[in-house]
Structures are given as structure tokens and as C-alpha cells.
Image 1 (tube, helix red, strand yellow):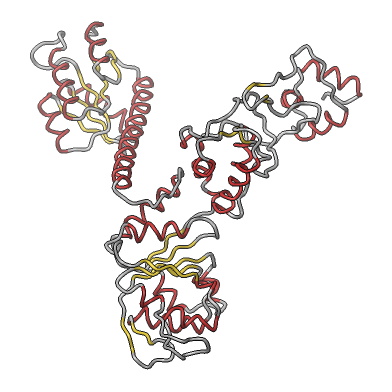
Image 2 (tube, one colour; image 1 turned 180 degrees about the vertical axis):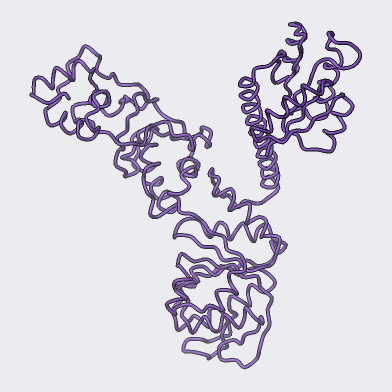
Length: 493
């Protein structure tokens, strides 16, 4: 419930205003002097103040009200204040409104006007405070990131920002972290950030792709082997756990680890103890384990493919990385990073990049960018260079190109309508460019556009017979569309 402070030396005024506000679900505080008002403000959370301009010394000058107003402003600069007086002076009103007074009303007041003003002012006040909180949080994030080693990661989305924030927070501890997400989304980058910002950053950081290890060599790779332990083992070798002693071990694709390997991994995670293959000597290591998987481990546990006790050893904290198509604000910064400053994007290319589903995530995007750079016929890359199909859009105007060196934050501000429309083959879907820079000329209003009966019927069906939308999609005026419908005998109702 919002709280309103009424400051007026007239008790009847306080009672009348207070009753009206309480009937409209506001909490009301009242006082009768500037001193009492400042005291209440120091002890109570107030969302808006309604104050009189004249108190005990005189009845018309408004000086006491001005002093109270400036005192309130000094203590809480963004608090909305409505000034109310029976002796309105234009000069005073102008001065105080310029100084930040939210509204200036005369007595007697209009209930509807007062309530409307209060509603709007409190809403703006809350929005302003929320914005200030966000600004403080963003500033703190920027300070934290400025001092952190982000290992060259490129991003622009809020989802990735939150993921990195959590990774930086977890990096200071030594708990096991499980990174989940689809292939190619950047799980290895998060592992790099966890190690690079941890107290172990100067210690060994060993990476192993568990899914790539052959079954017969899995134990030897992880725990080492003595000479002669298996055919071809001519000398003793240390395993990945031993190599990572005192540092960090990153186990990628942990969901592909067979059950036999899971048992041995569970033991070393619990006790830090293991034996090399072919040896009876127990060794002990201290290793922070970061693991990653694209599998649904909960489903694998339910189906008996993954041990539940191992899951809880690995998953003290989970970092969930979304697929690229769920953080589209990352696409343009990544493209800019991959293609470099020598190339820029045509608008159709930008649309195609943002609309593609990217099943291969960042890895697929990187490959598409390499393809585009290799096949480019000019410094302005098209959707064909990326191997993508053009996107049909209702955009009526297009810029010649969007520079790859532009602010990456614009990728979150779509400059086109993502809703598809029907466009006949005889009408250009977008402005064309010669030599990558000059705008082609679209047909003028006086030029005849050939539209077939099938074109019109398809557009009518897609736009549910709304003539204005059909005409816009076909590039015709309403009158021109009506003439062609008459010509083809189509119903205009």
C-alpha cells in the first residue's frame, strides 16, 4: 500500500484529503507543521507528499511552504511533492515547479484531478527508483567485469551476463560446478572463466573430453598407468587427475562416461584417492572438478545410465547455458568478432542471422562467419555469403548496410517486423545495393506493378481480407488494388 504524507495546518483539510485517499486504498500520514513533516519523513517510508504553502506565520506569502519544499528536496531529492494553496502566486508556482515540484494545485481541489495526479506521480516515482537500482546493479557488474579475466568471451545478452556473473561468483570458491547446455554453446569458455578467476588460476588447468576417450584407455587416461600395465605401455605415465593436482580438472561431456568409469570417478571425488593402472600404491590428490554435459542427466539417472550419487558430487552448483537462439542479443557481437572490422552486414544478412535457429549454436555461427569471409564478393556480406536463406519482412525502408564495428547493443533492438507477409515475385522484397553501398530504386507510385490473380488471392488469405494490409503487402494503393480485384472478379467484401 502506497503511503502519502499530508502537511497542512488546517485539520479539516487533512481530514478531508485523508478520507478521500483512504477510500482509494492509500495509507495516509498527517501532520500540521513543517517540523513535524521532516520528523515523519526521517522515520517513515513515504511515496508522495501533499503540502500546504502557508502555515502559522502568515497566510499568503508561501514562504514557509517554499522552505519546507526545499527541505524535503534536500532530504529526498526524487520524492514527488504536490503543492496545494488557496493563494496561488504564478511566480512562486513557476519557481517551485522548475525546482522539481511534481504538481501545483489550488484550493478547493478537484478530487478526480488530485487522484489522477497521485496515481501518475507514484507510478513514475517507483519506475525512477527501479531504474536507479538497475543502474547501480549494472555499474557494480561493470566494475566486477572490468577487474575479471573473461578469457575473450564475446556476448551482448542479459542471459549470458547473468551466467558470467554467477561464474565469477563461483570462481572464488572450490566447489564442484556442473555446466549444462547444448553442444557448441560455449561451456568450455565458462570453464575457462571459472579457473582464470579462481585462487587456483596459477595452478594446473587440465581439460579432458571424457566422451572422446576409448573405453580400454579411460582408466589409464584419468588415473595413469605403470609400465607394462597394458600392451604398449613401455613406461609409466601420469593420469589427468595427477597432472591437475593442486589445480582444476575440466571433464567435458561427462554424460558419456560409462558406468564402470563412473564408479572409479566417484571414489576419487569423495576421497581424492586412486591407484594407477597396474599399481597397488594409493595416491592422493586435491583437485577442483568442473564438468560439462549436453545430456539430460536427470533423465539418464531415471533410466539407469548415470549414477545419482556421482551426479550430486559433480553438481554442487549448476551453470545452465542457454542455446544461442534463446539469447539472440549475442548473435551480432559474435558475428562482429568473427568477421572482423573489414566487413559489414547488409540488412537482409542481419535479418537472416537473427532469424536462423542455429542448432549448432556458437560453433555453427563461427563456421558460417568463416564461410562468409572466404566467399564474400565485397566488404558488405549478404545472407548468401553465410549460406542462409533470405527472410521475407514487412520492412518498408532499409539502410545500405550495418557496420560490423557498430555498437553491439543494437542487436537487441530489432529494426524490422518479424511477422512474415506474402510478397509476389514481381515486387522487390527489399532495396538493392550496387557495389555494396548505393541504394537501388524501388518502383514509383506511377509505375505499373503487375500482380496476378493468384498473388492477390494468396495475400487476401494471409491477411484475412484486410484490404489495407493486402495493399501494403502487394505494394499497391487501395484504389489500385480495388481496380485489379474488379478486373479479376474478386469479392471486395
